[in-house]
Image (tube, rainbow over all chains, first blue to last red; front, top):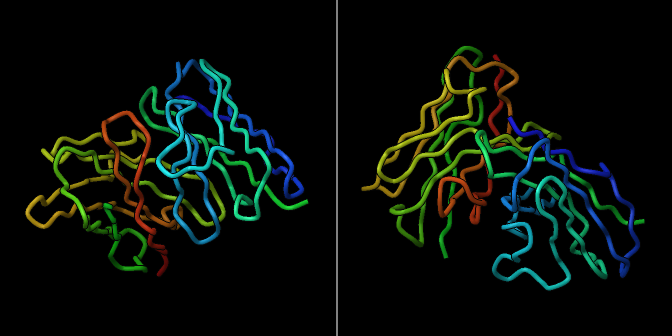
Length: 107
Length: 118
């Protein structure tokens, strides 16, 4: 099973600043990685797939990068609605697995 | 735009079978992969398995011996059955759509909390 590790567990950021979230896999994912945003009491929402492609309707301030085992989600100029938990998800091998999440909180 | 809605009992007794249904509206169940994913309270996400509209399935090995996912294309529904449940199966259960077997989940249901308790 591919283990996906996210860091940091919690990120404190002021509104308007940027946030950089990391996702590292135990083996190469090529670019088969997605990012989701989850707010309290809601289902996850797809942000990024294929490591760097924004899903439909996702603002340009969300960007993904990386390949192989190291991936990054960058949120530039954080808005109030961006404070949430973010998960990465690998779909390069079975079983599909998720990282443990990074909580982005208001500083 | 496709919408997914989970339904089923919110409370299941230990050792019994958890049964949930996901109803797909606003689109056809055909030509997509339909997944179940769960999230224990305060924890991360775990993929349970998928079913293709044709009926082929793939399950997480950690749950494979207890899981069955079925599809009813005439009702645009698919279902999850998880047997011999314990408190560790208490979670919010989500249904989700994927365009292919190994891709992202582009649409999710709102989730339903299932508690295992006597």
